[in-house]
Image (cartoon, rainbow, N blue to C red):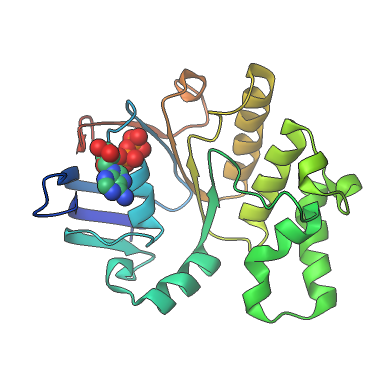
Length: 227
Ligand code: ADP
């Protein structure tokens, strides 16, 4: 069984309106457990839309998305939110951290709806903060952090729930060359932990890496080199 199955998915935004856009056209794709896939293509090709469908943030217009055997594209809103919390870690281009909260508070946000004991919460945060070398800034507000520290906080937040799937949308778009290289090394480590990973990017730093299993090219909502 594949970890992620995209089955003949078409996504039309604003159907029937003058601004109707077909973001994905009959895309089919299977991603196996533990696989790292780089989804590449120019801006506007449909990469974010595909990640949004895997995360059940969006529903396909046609077709189906199955994750770990579950038809996530048919989940209700509440169920989709629960699914995201347990199954998906998301790293965004602009980190999407809350600047006035501390590093630890930001990292804990995905865990709060779980109603976990205080001790356990701090234990979880401590584990990922140590892994991504940000524990010394636990109480610092995010707005006072360097770009690299914000990057590590965003990665720690995405992984605090220990989700089996990590999705990253243009993760290096706002990073300089050195931080982009660091991100690639973090990715190598996360892949070694057995996570299934999809990175949507047009940054050539991700192309030809030895630990990437597949590069898939998407153009105008169509996958070109699906193997
Ligand atoms: P990429 O991530 O490759 O840059 P996107 O998936 O963001 O591409 O966008 C694919 C196409 O769908 C683009 O034409 C974009 O304008 C359109 N699109 C994406 N999201 C929306 C939305 N929420 N409403 C309307 N059109 C959208």
